[in-house]
Length: 465
Image 1: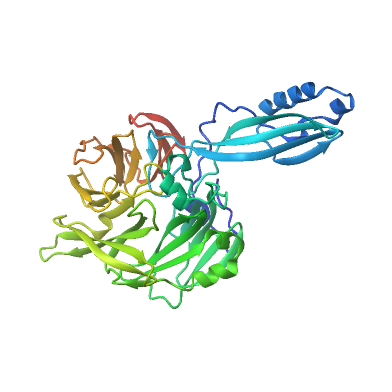
Image 2: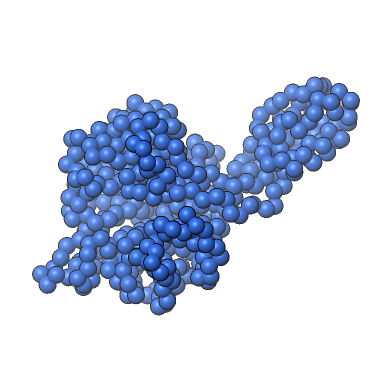
């Protein structure tokens, strides 16, 4: 799926270059029942078929169609009522990317209460279980455009304490939307915010930002209410904003106010190279992990890692130096990347992965509320993009790095410093622009081709672009 830009687009299809959607490669099996309201013909009703015959016809056509409509409809003397009981995303836990807010369910399971009445007399009620593909999230294929994706979460895997904190009294979220809903377009002194095809300009003229400023979106979910967090930053400046998802979708005036009023930051870091939203506890608001770079006297790169957590009493984010990574060597600052994970898709405490030159540093807070485990490993080469961390199973992850014409797929043993030394996968005379993990496969994008590989590094397909 590609976005279509409105009349503010300047010729070239920039949004197509920014947001890369994939054609569905895997159809979800085990579809129990799917239906449309036009399945019962008026002719069959007039002919006075029995309720059982009508229901058989309904279910037969349910299986042959690929949609179901909710609500009540009257056809002749018959009333059909379909009510959604619950909708639950189904997640795979094998060969899936596990970046925070990046959960991508393989299917959505809907339970529908279906009833049939004739002349006001109730004839039957049954539950229909159907599975369908989720609404997909989008990827930023160009830094000028940043997509807004409402995260999918696995509420069934949450503990009772997590459900009580994150969900409303009915154990649900207040807004049922998921996936892609809009995007930010970056300009020098303003942001264009587009949500549900409605555009709004956010003024940045009062901020001391250079032309290469960046955006990073985070989310909180408290008592069923989603809020979006926006970090706007360059090397020396950082601004944090917050707005509710309900306002983002329905109240643009409030969003304008929210995105014009940055939250105060006490002890903000400088020399910011990269940052990510992450969780320091299972039941809490997201914090910012910031990778700040500096060069030692001999020219070796070092990284300072900062935590910026929200202090409710001061109504401000407070910066705190957490660790330093030294001895990286004479490498460029753009070889530093930081990524947060959510392996269970439950908004739990986030492991942090930092690639700095050829060093991989993993901070693991998953097993202890107060003590952070740190593991340091050496990679074969640095990376020009954020590392892609893929859950292989409950005990190990793949870590994918890439630059130039090659990528490497490391196998990392969870909560350890054990990592293998892989052979690079090389695409001669082609520069890898992006790697995306979906459907248990790797999609490698170059200027000329789209390659599809499995996690045994076998090439399954090659598509000309």
